[in-house]
Image (cartoon, rainbow, N blue to C red; front, side, top):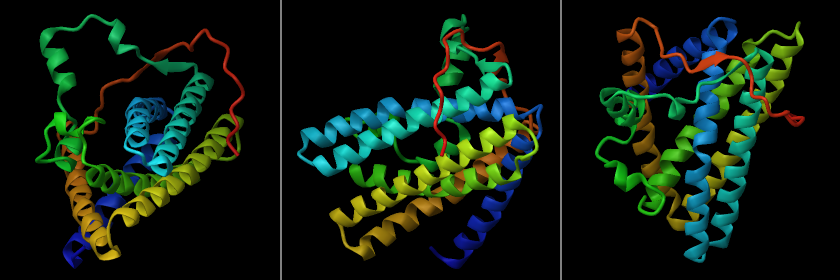
Amino acid sequence: MNFLTYLMHLAGSGVNAYYFATQIRDSKTRPNVLAGFQLAESGSVPFLSALSDRAAAEGDTWLAQKLAKHASDETRHGQIFAHALKQLNKQVIDFKSQPQTKSASKSQQQRSPFFAAYFEGYAQEQLKPAAIDWDVFMASTYILELDASKDFTRMANVLPNDEPTSRNLKLGMLSIAQDETSHAAYLYEAMLRRMSATQVQVLVDEWRTRKVNATFAMIGGILQRNGETRSLVQDGAPSEKDSELIVA
């Protein structure tokens, strides 16, 4: 990573950290942030599970087990955020059950500004579990997991300790941060199993640059919307009885 990219990385990370810290600390915007995280964490489970099956079919038992564990962790992360929303008497909106106009359906199929920039040059078909290049998956996900571990730690640290709901969420997010760190570690090891350390560094630098560009694309999108985001939550909580979540 060249020096200019490094400076842009620091700047983008700082803005991103400030934005999400303020959003999760504010009781009015916290539910929407939690809902976004729940959707992202839970939404990655089918993808990771399919990749685990693919790795097993290709004879890479080690990678298959790591991916299965990764999918299991993401399931638990989604439950932690769902539980946090329930404590606020909120739940994620079930968009699939709502009638959609043709234009709305088309809009939802489009990538977010972040992922459009992050995966620039790749068609969606190339990013599906059965088709994605392993190097692309490993390097792109390594960067996301590594940064997520730091982001979740920062957000957890701004939550107050003086009331049970925030304190429980803080513990949950810190445990998620630890999982994200372990995910980044196995992905880095997976790359080292496939190529030299020098080649890994070149690949990581490429995706770090992509992440920098994606972060500024996301910031630009937020500025264009004047900070307004689509609501992802509604009042009420799921009727099913929650199981106790172990966050430590």
